Image (cartoon, rainbow, N blue to C red; front, side, top):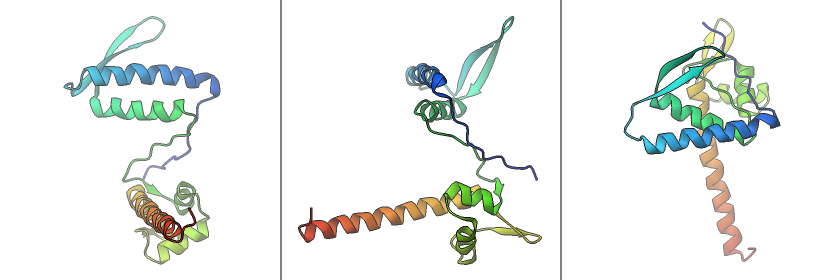
Length: 153
């Protein structure tokens, strides 16, 4: 099994403008060429120029990355089938490792054991996060509605 590196990448302030300029060009190109399944780019170093064909989906992902990086947000790319350690999963949810283990033991997140270690697929973790975010939004909406009914807003 390959080790999954989930360290986020964040651009220094002086590179954010460059990311935003590239984003503008990539989005414009994608909008003008909606029918293309492959995007052809040219990679250039000091001496050579080399054509490169990329799947449209990869370029769309690049646009998403540029948008986040240009906005100053840190970005990590994790394959959906990557197996994470409990610490990596806890870091992704921004919770403590003991809290995450409680979620695993309660059956909230699917995992498997490898020897004595728990492994969580990124897709299971993201499914839990989506469900948890949905539950939080519902509760916030209910509270907002109660505030309105009680005349507090």
